[in-house]
Length: 118
Image (cartoon, rainbow, N blue to C red; front, side, top):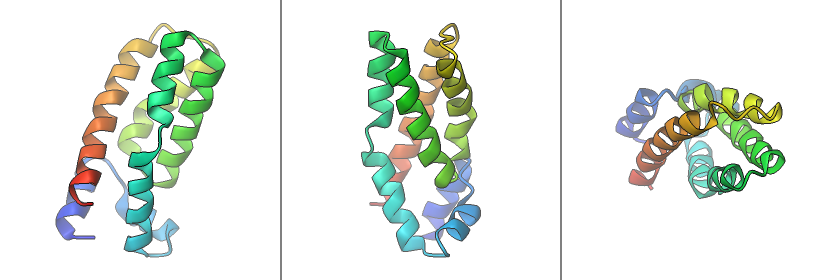
């Protein structure tokens, strides 16, 4: 992992040092899982289920994405994913559209950085 890549991740609210501790210091393993995150379809599925009004399935996808983001220490996404997940858990949809929009912006920015280095 280049120092430039690391700095870009840190600039996006990723706790790289804490994540590397979780991945036993292996930058290569961490990078592998970051790439898998980009390939994961939970975000797209969540959006689709929200748009279709299938709240239980939207919750499952948000919860999955939250777990992955937590394991990778993607705090920038967790700031939005946690409230979205809890709202979906309780079937509260009032703030979902604007929070989903914020999540999409954050998700795309982070994925762009990860793809840039792979």
